Image (cartoon, rainbow, N blue to C red; front, side, top):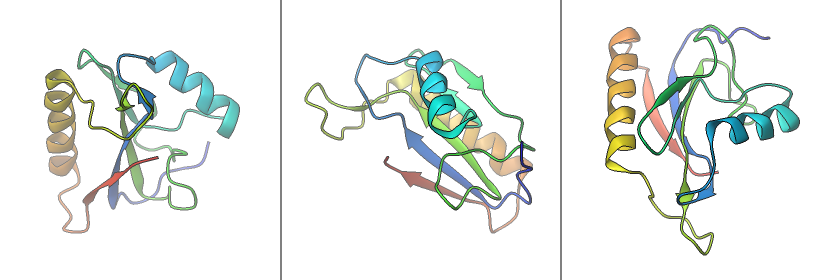
Length: 120
């Protein structure tokens, strides 16, 4: 696996699953098929459980052509029952995501560290 490089960004994604569907295992299986590896450094499940998927030293596969120095955080969900974009985050997901962002901002205090929201 390729090395991440100097961390500058955190890109926050949704998995583009209809609310209430999808699992960490399913997301990883899909990413393994598409990209040959797990895509995200962290995944947050509906109940707020945080899975660290990749070492913070390893480059992910979550933002085509822009993965160097870019950490990936993904929450399961992001679509309503009709497959339209919707913020489906549960209160537990919101709390866990805030925790991760706070920890990463402390770990990488550079003024260049910018959380970016990306809707796949």
